[in-house]
Length: 123
Image (cartoon, rainbow, N blue to C red):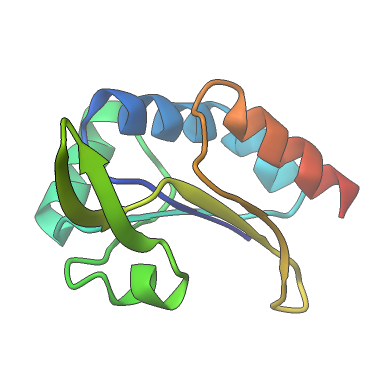
């Protein structure tokens, strides 16, 4: 299972990341892997985002950031000198045994889905 956390629906980087996972979804499925995305906005936002970009994998609404807290990705961030709490772009690869096989922190979107796919194939 791939569980990737992204900051916000329908923003440039998050859209690019989601579309990369979407485009590689047949390859993930061929490797018996499921993809789940999670961020803090509500179900309605997730539905609009999924429909707009034809995202056919589940997007988890973590409005109260409970899941993000459990996975340690709800962290202090800063932008333009302002500090705030938010999701740090992070991906988990979870093996069939339920254990984390790999974690990517502070993900750079370009090429990330493909890198995760290679790690899935190596499991």
